[in-house]
Image (spheres, rainbow, N blue to C red):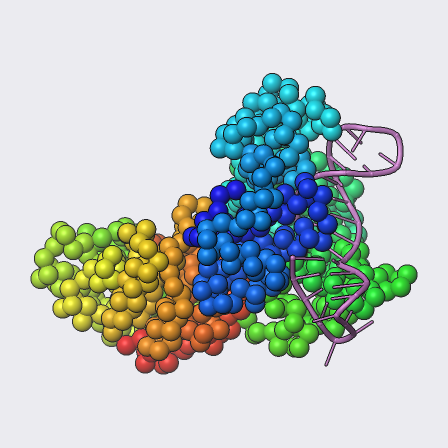
Length: 588
DNA sequence: GCCGTTTTCGGCCCGACTGTTTTCAGTCG
């Protein structure tokens, strides 16, 4: 395992997981292993960079970081290595840590394979493992057989477990179609997605659905006849798995109505949330499983989730919050946030129409009128057109000014015809590139024509954290800039966000009433939920926008709202929940 | 190794599934 002073959260989490795996091989105490796994999970879900917490001397505030792990990570940031970890890894084959990324391979299996095949090269470990499987070298090892060799081969073929996740909107819509189909069967009493999909995480592994029914057989027989089903992977008394024509598999689980609440709660997770609940139960001398709450010898099962949480002395927790990041404590104290909902949204502040051509990036496909009609049909009271700025290289200042002037006039004309019975306001804005030095890619003269601007980074992603922070601060300091578009620049599955000192950004936003966008575009969902929560704690307001390039994209708003909910956002913390009159004074 | 409105010591979530080692270990959620 490589170690350095500059490790990010993901890498530190993997390092701690590797230590846990190594301990498992070395026969350490089960609880010491779990301690490292817990610390790894805490790092992975931390909204702050661990390095920043270390800078501020707050390492020990991370849950799961006690004296020992704190000291090791302190050593890591001071010296770039941890002597104790190096010692732990010393006797183990480096290739085993690579194998841990293959589904179904845990520490014991990884060690055995790396040690006994053997796999000498960590970089080619997975290819070498595949070769060994194809040559029949795995099934002859003790503890392995024909089946496990085949399973390993299939697992490698299905890519690595951290890469093959679906984007939330894709998974949501896929699940939505199957749910509509299933609802046509009368035996289906209730139906919900499970796991990360129900919690509305930004990426989803598998689609799992649960149905409450008194007649599992009818439901399952109906399920496997789903028109998009390519093959039936398995069907038992209470569950079935089908493979869709698009290559995704879907699991359906049937549950008796009287146990619906209990099972739904269990299968929604998250794992950390459930573990925490069980620890609370243990302290009362109770025990929780997916079958219910066991008190002495009697097991209580619940038809509704609310009853389950009530028994635990809690109010019902929205699935988006179930990550064990304080929601259980909040529920016990009856202080859960009143989360924002889709219907609270009254407008969209990041939309591309076709009015400006020759922009620095892609143009919108629909006319302003068509986009406005769509916004009105969603019940919105306002929107802002934010095409990309005209390309600076291909036009002189006067040409750019003329284009923006023409757009301004067009919008004024639209606003002048707005009737008073259903007020609707269109803002004149742009999405302006933030250059590497933090200046805006639009002449001041043209900027002055705008009501406000959205500023976004579309180039030079690899600046140092310090330079990137300065860049964003400078752009946000411009009086016309009200919104930082897709603030981290991440592209799910493609590109990590750039490194920024968020503390400084939050301070500036708070002080000068600048807003951070949650961009609802499927690959962005940016700000990420953890940073949303951090921003809100600092009193920064957010704005949820779709980045639509045609009028149909306005419907992506619900995914931005999902991110906001996961970030504990209330209507009051989201700018575009404000009504027509308030927003005009805010944004002009 | 961590943690504490019953503990600074003595505990630490629970069960299903799979495959192989005929009674259990490993992995996963």
